[in-house]
Length: 348
Image: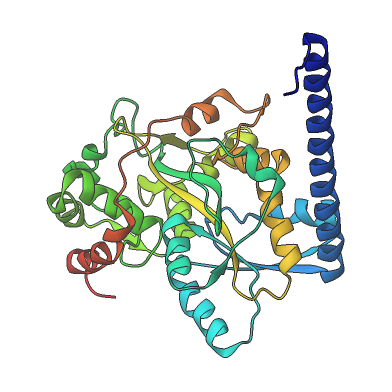
C-alpha cells in the first residue's frame, strides 16, 4: 500500500496540470501545423470553383477578399438554385469534375447530401465560431441567414398607406401593383410561396394571384420597374435597400418587415464530392466563417451565423437583420409546393 502525504499529492496534481497544459499546447500546435500545410497545398492548387445562386451569399465581395487574403483565384458559376442539381449530377456521373464548393439554401444542400454529391469538410478552425443554436454537420457549414420583406416605392405608396402585414397585400388597391419572384421554380419566390401556404393556406395565394401581380424570374427587372413607378411593391431581400442607404438614400424606396416577421432562409456551403481543388475548397469554407467574411456578409444585408462586431452598421439595418422570422415551410414540402404553385400561377 502506498500512502501519499498532502504535500506529495499537491505535487502530483501540479505535475498533472503541467502535463495537461503541455499536451493541450502540443495539440494546438499540431492542429496549426496541419492547417498551415493545408493552406500551402491550397495555394499550390491555385483556384477554387464555387457554384452559388445569385442570392446565395456568394457575393463578389467575398470572392475578392478570399483572393486578396490567399492569392487563390475564385472561379464562380452563378445561377438559380434549380439549375445546379443537374449540372452537379452530370459531373458526378461523367467523372468530369469542375465544381469544388456549392453555396445554396439549406434545403438544396440537404438534397445534394442525400444524393451523395457531397463529401465531409473535415476539421475547420473557424467552425467553433458558429453560434451554438445553429446546427452544423460533417458535410455542410452555415454561411448566412437571408431574409425577405416588402420593398416599396415611396412615391407610389403614401405614408400611412404602407402595408404592415403580409395580409395587407391582399387589398384590392394593390391590383397589378405587386411584383413577385416566380414561385414555380426553386427560388426566393418558392420560399415565399411555401411560407404563405404554411401560415395562411392556399386561399391566400389564390387571392394574391387574383390581383394580377407581375410574376417573373428577373428580380433585377422587378427592381427597375419599382424605381420607375410601374409597380409599387416587390418582395425582396434588404440588400438593394442597404446599398442605397450606403449611397445616401436618395432613391424613393423603403424596406418594411411585416409585423408577423420576415421571410427567411439559411444558406449553407459544402464541398462537392471529388473536388478538383480539395484543399482550396476547405480553406474557402473556413474563410466563410471568419470574422472578416461574416462582417462583409452582414454589411451586405444578411444575418451572420457567428457573433460579429460591426460598430459602423447603420441602426436601421441592424433592426432589419434582427427582425422576427416568419414560420417557413419545411423542406419536405418543397416539391408539393412547387406543384401547387403551378396549379395557381399556371404551368411553366
